[in-house]
Length: 517
Image 1 (cartoon, rainbow, N blue to C red):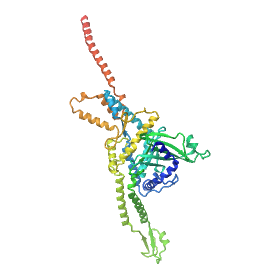
Image 2: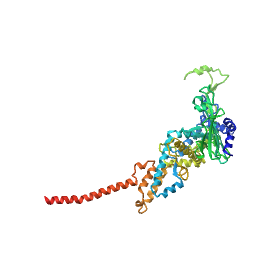
Image 3: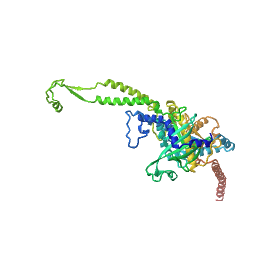
């Protein structure tokens, strides 16, 4: 199908009609997300009719909320370490060959320094635009709802999160998304001038207007985007993006073949969470009933209840022993059985949500070993979550942020691919960030020290620069270049020669003065 045919197919009906049509396929995923939120954190995915006045029913157990928050924090720690870049920029294979063929031994080290500075710039940009906060909210959505959508405006910068009930997506057989429609409700007053022309002028400024953003993949491996309001295309909203730099990132936690949407982690343990919530409610009710105090008075008794009620200690009240019997519910055994079952459910869920993990430290600087442990824990205990998100979240995120910085003029237009720069996401057992290079360099120097003549064959300048790069320090401002070092050495040599020449002259002058005296 040609691009013109694709365009005519997608624009045959209004975007709203297309959105409503695709929403029917999405409905069961939305219903499942609402169900999951009710047993974990209800406000994470409310009903469509809920608003700021809605009072949510608190679950009778807290392990669902604690488990979701704990798992989300571990995923964020593994994917986005607080003190290390989670990616690496390297030269492509052809570019490396050209640099090596130049004969400049320090060129690759200088390029590594440049790549490291760009990495730090990208990380600083993420922190300045609060990308980590938005992504953490997205991870919570993935755990509960299984899906979410991230949007990084190329020119405006920043990042925006869409919940599952605000967008639809279509994927092909390989899992690549080929169509996406996002729905925004924006007040009339906040609309740009080119969008207001499609709305009646007498519209209340506080009224929310539905804006639909339609993105689809053409045959030329290019994503096309435009916006629609009230059935009309917004003038100037059409844009094009390369396939690897499209600013829309639809995420899913569990990939299911043949499905455009993913499944959530809570889906897998909903039965245990629901059972735990039910039994916790039953235990709370039985405990309340067991604490209820009630006294039964024999109908044939001459005892006056008001006298007994108001009697003080040591008073005499007319009556017989047995006229009053305390009523008590004998539910101790039932409570023990229920409590035991509750403990089993809590144990299973604690294991599932990594609440019993040995790494629970919240420190400003987390070691690479701890990050490596959490990453492997996610792979071993939680399936392929880490691998999937590294491919579908980390890599597109880096490319989108680089595109944003290039559009803003903060970065040079860097060529990509074999002849330019390649982006590598550090995953698995490999330590995250360039901090792992420090360990490798240290091991290299330790092993090299055991080899004869190792020190004489070592390029000390390059080693110092690589150590600085591994530590995230701009070593070029601290370490002299080869030219500067040679100039200093030459100057020191000249000073030594001058001193050596001056010494005999001084001795001769002293001897001559002595003889004359």
